[in-house]
Length: 84
Image (cartoon, rainbow, N blue to C red; front, side, top):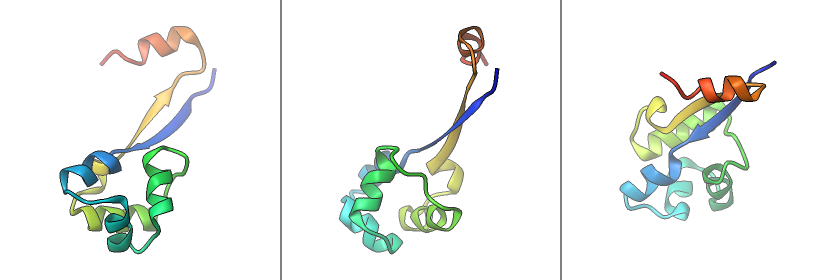
């Protein structure tokens, strides 16, 4: 069956490491606290532009902050997808 790509991020983890609140990060990235919250909880995926602004605000590389996971379409493939 088909694969589903799940776009994920480490915004919360990196923000806390930097000692920033959601509001402080939002100001640095030129967005709102609500957007940062939605990104951290996975309710929203950022545009390429916004992801770049967030990385700049967090002083990190894109691949340190964002990643994706593939979900397989059936249970047999899901079990195998965790093997490296």
